[in-house]
Figure 1 (tube, rainbow, N blue to C red):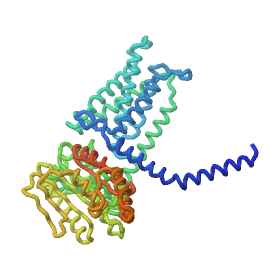
Figure 2: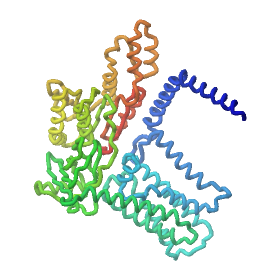
Figure 3: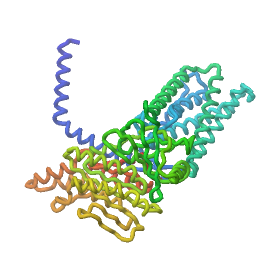
Figure 4: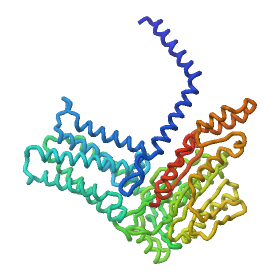
Amino acid sequence: MDPTVVYAIAFCAASLVIFMVAHLGPHLRHLAVYVWVCLLRNLCYRYAIRRHTWIGPYTILSVLVHIIYVSGNVICLCYNGRSVSFTFASRAAVLSLINLGPVFLAIHLGFLADFFGVSLTTYRQVHRTCSLVSASLLFTHVIAVTVRPRTASLDTWSLRFAIVGTSALGLLVVLSALPLRRHSYELFLRLHQFLAIVFAASIIYHIFSVSDMYRLPAYIYGAICGFLMLAQAAIVLYRNKALGKLCPRIVVRRDNGSLQATVYLPRPVRVDAGQYINLWVPSQALLSSHPFTVISWSPIAQDSLELLIEPRHGFTSKLLQLSNYGQNQYLAFISGPHGITVPVLEFKTVVLVASDFGLTSILPYIKKLFNDNALGNRLRRRVHLVWHLEHKDYLGLMLLVKPLIDDVLENAEQNEYNLCISIYCQHWPETQTFGDHERLFILKRAPDLGKIIQEEHDRHYNIGRVKRRVHFSDDTAADEAAVANLPLRDTKLVGDVQRQIRRAEGSGLVLVSGTGVMRDTLRDTIRGYVGSGFALRELEYQPE
């Protein structure tokens, strides 16, 4: 082709692109925002399966991802192309091994969640889904091998280990049912780990006993697992040992039926808001550790970490026994900090919702927000803490966190922060208001989360100032239509209201660490405000 023709085509194409960007760019941008809001509202915030005893909850997006994942495995299993030399049984076995990849990468799921940059809850869902699909494929492999003509005797060690491994996996699936593992979680966890080891050892022996098995992928996967485990061990060793210093020590104190613990570290560690550590106290529980949210927050690395613990069964009950011997120091080891933190500094309105001990995950975020204001950030934030007390020892829990809340209130008073704390307790004698600036309320009722979010949304957009001239609804499209119908002399008002309605994503944030009912209610409520830039985030710790 002649170079001049190529130049002419390129010149016309560039001119067309410039024209489209100049005239259609804003419309395409608005279309992209509209499509994104619709996807968030209808896929991410809408439940396909509600919360039940044995299953759920699952959003529509989660169900779609599961369907695509399972369909991909079914297609690979049933595909019979000419280039595929595997039989149906062999293909099921290979697919089962592939799906086991994320399951056995490392011993600690929190480490893998940090490695992939997702929350522990998300990685647990990946772990569970991959395990169930792998188990289904393995059972398919066993059935396919059983029904075809027998080519080997069951007396061979390879088949014996295969039967042991399949039986261990079957028990793993049954015991992982939600009601069973909630009944005695620590017993379930130890049994789960034991059966996983038995299954892995049996399958490895079975794989390497197959003469025609291509073993290079197994060696590569083993090397990756070994590297990740060595990396995790090195990080744990670095956190727990420093030259010339003792290993971490823990001091446990009982206060109003709950526990306060301080972990003294050999080297400072920076813990962001919402992160947690795994604590191991060998003198009390040699084979078990427990995750705890760190309630102390600082912009710099900390030499000691503060924990607030609700005594239950197992590990926490053993820590409760330590408090009977006074404030003695005991040898402890930690891993972490684990977990992802929510970028609360990007939001102008932050609503923090907690129930009972969920407040332990919320308080570090308040400290972080106030510290950002103290550093001279000009963004004036509205922070509203909603705490629902349902605990049987509600008075003891309130007295336990009173110093923490007093510290937050004193900080807010001194620096004139826009803070409101609403404590809802149906057992409280009467509704009360504390402080000259009415920052703390104790209300004798359950929180109306829908009304609270609506009030914070209206306050954020200063809707009260313009409601006399513009009627707002919960429908963003209807609001924009109402603004478009205003008289031309109100052009300044039109511009102000349009900027309020079309505020960019990230203008309002709702953080929750509460019961399942509370989280479901908030998810249904936030769906109506996604178009206004409000978002919902569930923290790592949820008091179930």
